[in-house]
Figure 1 (spheres, one colour):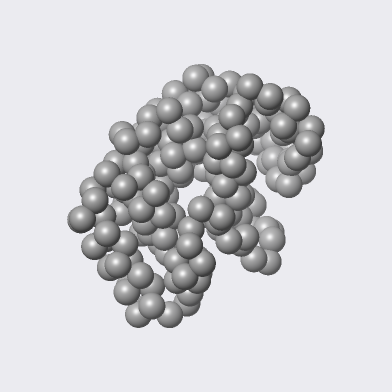
Figure 2: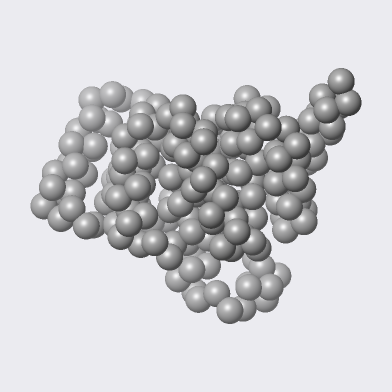
Length: 205
């Protein structure tokens, strides 16, 4: 963590916190949604930006409890439609419980409210991909990757979308490579390298 802070000394403390949060989210998205990365951690770390009672509901297996918590958040949103944190938390809950279309709607609204936050666009890209809209996902993720080329998670999600959403292996290989240049010692680096080798073998055929 100390090395990452030194390397990104120009980033504010608040932005560092957001980067940590999206790293957790993106890691979860990889292990939960991408077949090639099925062997993930046994559990998902709770997000620090959500109240403890909301975290519990978000990970609950009780459909009634989940429905009640979503209803509460939607009620809060009706009272304050521009509540960025509520929009984002709802997006997380919808995505984690298999409702990517609704997640995309919430993330899109959140992105309009905070267009300078790269993590919300990455989350939007994941939701679009999972809702069967990989072309739109690539558009969103490409803009973030180009605007913030040192933001590894953007390249990772872009690569995943090219690989599994659009089946464009050469572009996936390039994006995976750019991710590894930035995050060669990340938790998923080995899996990315293995996926790159698989792609290279497929391209030879």
